[in-house]
Length: 562
Image (cartoon, rainbow, N blue to C red; front, side, top):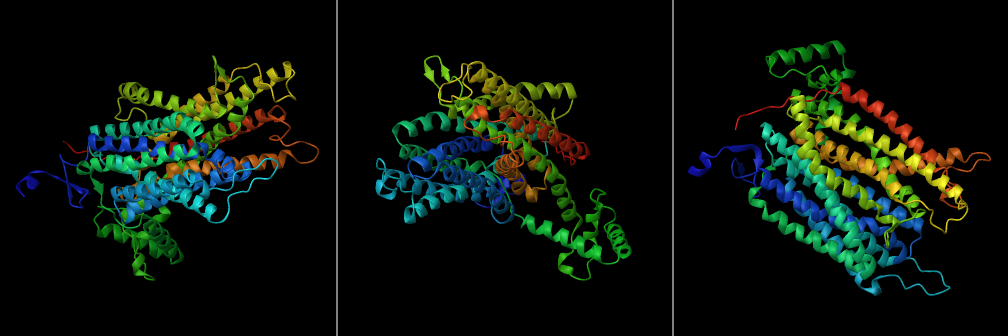
């Protein structure tokens, strides 16, 4: 009792036993370090499944390539969209600590289902016989496959919706050193995410290709299983934000109250807001940003249950101000989607030899991961300290400047991709290989690595910037949900990429013209035109981003000593 009185409590936070979290005992960089190790293991488990799932579904489950690719897109899109559920539960009903543990167990169960199916031949469709069509997985076997995949997707959604917020919660936002540590945490979170993915697409995928897919699933299962005790080891050091009710309910409540008060007499509504402000002696007065929402503060005679406080209105304003920033990052993720589609196809036509070693084109995904793993420490330990000295500010580079740098790099990446494609087709023309796709072109695949370099750098700047921006700017009651938008942007980028490809082929294929993205082989595609289109769209998106970023006003930071 005496020891507890000597220590100051963290207001609004609890420990793993749901008791008051104490300063000096809970939170800090050591607690956040456990989260970083867990992220390596979680990323390794998820990326192992996602990276080669197309081959597994087509080769072992005998699905067509189109259906396999469609199922992978749905699986990954669902996993990222479900981060909203993980974030919502973390804010509304459970702590981030509880949501992670529940989600990790769900993903572990899904991986067990997939591993058992991969190990037991009787749970797979019959082996293909020569000169007979293969039987696609159906019935109970298909149900087992989809049950395993979507349990994994549900678990991944919960983990990614809670883990970044749980790590950032450990650091004190009310001190300059705590805010600097939080920035470092997000940089290294992206580093760990990429490091786990790097192990997955090299070592684990090699094992899956050479020893069998059951080994790949097995390693994923072990990885997520090990992550649970690693996470639990840090339990005594964690502090978790106390859930404060549904953030979605608060947003809807403010919007409905605004609508109802707008329908009543505008003059009386204004008077009510002014009177309300006077009553609280100007301690809490609604700001003039998004002024129409201030109507929600007034007393609503139609329904007293939806009366809103100034704090609730201001919380909703902050969320709404961040949505345009979220929308502008979708285009960058649309560009990133090209790395796993057309860029791989480009590399497949080129000379992929590295000395005596022949590199599989799909292994090009290693490049952006290597760039991120290399750049993240340089950014945190060299670039940021330099800009802090130059600008004499705490952050050095603001969140929105960082996201903007990523968007500029994505523009450069698309321009480079277009120029590399022009060069590749010129080599094909001068070599007389325009119509012959069986022979590799006399040009090294390292040319394609250039677009991976720029897009990998763009991903580091924008993704880490988004995570920190949404966590820092959003009200504490909505942080996990808002941070989940970073993952949702990834999903929407992939969906937008598919839509743009379909629209481009539909428009350019009218009349006697061939669609840009079709032909006997890649040399007959007009891929360079598609990349230039993506470059132009990215420029327009950046101009749109600048409009919102320049208007945005950061919330004030509260500083305490100690």
